[in-house]
Image (cartoon, rainbow, N blue to C red; front, top):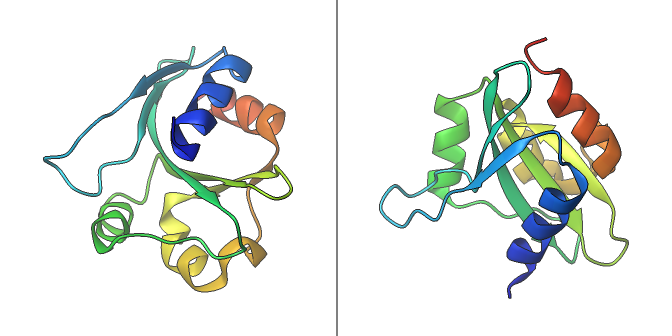
Length: 122
């Protein structure tokens, strides 16, 4: 099992208030990894990234997706060394690609991310 799959399993286990759908998509490049739905009836997407350094790498297709869809899209990054989890809005993908994990996140940690996602659209 790859690192992003392990990260997804951790998210699914720890953020149970959200309905998670893992998108296994090889035909529409750049599509985020997760489609999610909260109890307020709000849909959103999450791109998962796992990194060993502070740099976060994106394909041109991923950058294009988040640039074209700046609302209700998010990027959740886990740093393998520290285990830290950071959440960024998809609209900030260019800054995240340039600055890496030095960029200020909108949430830190799985619990905070779960609460943030639960309150979307409420």
